[in-house]
Amino acid sequence: METVNPKLETSIMRKYSQLNPKYKLLLNDTSSSTKIYQVTFKDKPRFILKCATANIENHESLDNCFKEYRIGKLIGTVTQHAVQTLDLRQKRTGKNLVVELLKDHGGVPLNFLRGKLKAGDALKMLIQLACALELLERLGISLLNIELKNIAWDSEKGLLRLIDFSTCLLYTS
View (cartoon, rainbow, N blue to C red):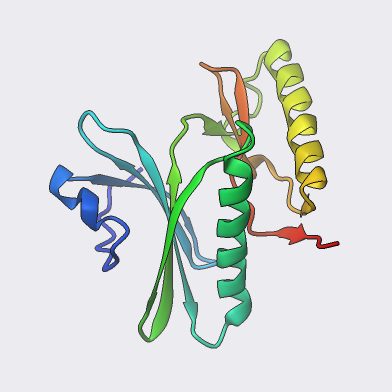
């Protein structure tokens, strides 16, 4: 994978700039104008930086970013089976740049592990996925897009994490 400095003009990484962060492009999804970077520092924790650009007129895309942030803040604090959202910034120029900072818990998206899983790990994953989905339902959140790329597995910790909440539905009573 290539290493890229996204040259973000946002305050989200400003406090880390003196630590000489290194940016590694993990995903460039042209269909949703989203880039995901792994940010590493010497002797510091890693982060995931999710950058989404949208035309200012495309409010649905922006709404999804803010909804994902709210859901990530909520469930990242109540379960270990979801990525923890740390911060979100929006910059308005000709396009909107929305940057979400996530804790990098480690692990690999399941779409990279096809055919490489042990039976015991697969069973652990299914049980943890069922627990995570049940918790989301109790919180009034329905995960609509259960794809391998939206689920990470940390084999060292034996832990599954949901990593994308952009297509969730929120229920209110």
